[in-house]
Each structure stands twice: as C-alpha cells, then as structure tokens.
Image 1 (cartoon, helix red, strand yellow):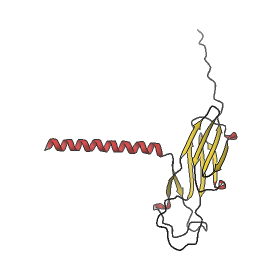
Image 2: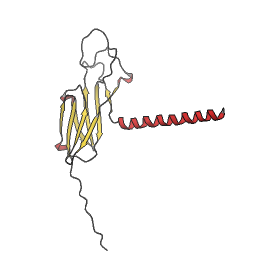
Image 3: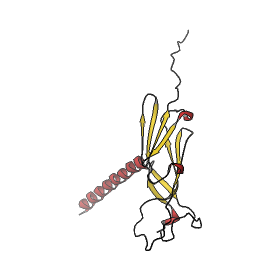
Image 4: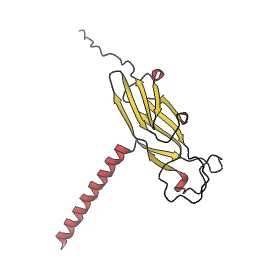
Amino acid sequence: MSSVLEQWKSGLGQSWEHLMEGWRQLWERAAGALTRFQPRERNDEKSASPNLPAPAGGVRWAVLGADIYETDEALEVRVEIPGLDREDLEVEVLDGQLVIRGEKRLEREEKQGQYRLMQCAYGRFQRAIALPVPVKAEEAKAEYRDGVLKITLPKAETAKTRRIAVQG
C-alpha cells in the first residue's frame, strides 16, 4: 500500500511541475501582449452607460497582439487595435521601446435592457514593446487602417566593428 501511495504522490508531483511549466511558458509568450484598460471615471459624461457590468477594480484586460518584422533597413511593427479612431492613438519611441497609448471609447447609447455578456475592453491603455535594435525615431511613420496600426521604424546606423592590431 505504501508503494502505491508513493507512486501516486510522485506522479502527482510531476504532473503539477509540468502544469506549472506550461503556465510559465504561456505567461512568458503572452504577457507582453496582455494590456490593461483603465475605464473612465463614472462621473465623466462620456463614460459608458451605468448598466454595464463592472469588473473587480473597474479594470479590464485585453490582448493587443503585435508582430515585429526586421529588414536590412527598418523594423516593421504591426499591432492589432480594433475599434479606435486614428485620433485616439499616440505612438512614440522612448528608451529603446515603442510606446503605444490610446483610448477605446464605448459610445453611450440609450437602450432598453442590460448587458448579459461584455468581453471587450474599453478605456485608456498603454503598450510598450522593446525594440531589438536602435532606430531613427525622427524618421518613423505610422498608419492606422482597419483596426491595424502599422509602424515603420528605420534602423539607426550601428557602430562599425574594426579590428585593432596589437603592437608589441
């Protein structure tokens, strides 16, 4: 009986370790895309209607997926941010990171009834993406169309490597 119990405990321990490793890997891969949306204050006249379900602390989370493609000349960044107007976005390069700020607004509608499901995030958000190489921020271009923000960041000239002969 003791042997069976020990095997069961060992198997359970290994299963738990595998589960935790899977969650750790998932977190490492997805954590950068997870973005916090902070809702407007309720007394703000542009805030969402009062019949919206409020999550704990009034904060919602959403995934703003991004791709970075590197060419010889530039970084091409693509971020999916549906439901905004171009004027609601702010993009800057700061300390080696691409910083995207914005606000996704829920237009106030006069309707009868109440929400039964609300999975979309609304409010102010910020997403910072570490840039893999130095860029020329002053030459960057951004375009927002069909819910996708495309940013072209020309690469900065890198210091050239030069071999130095050692004299004796």
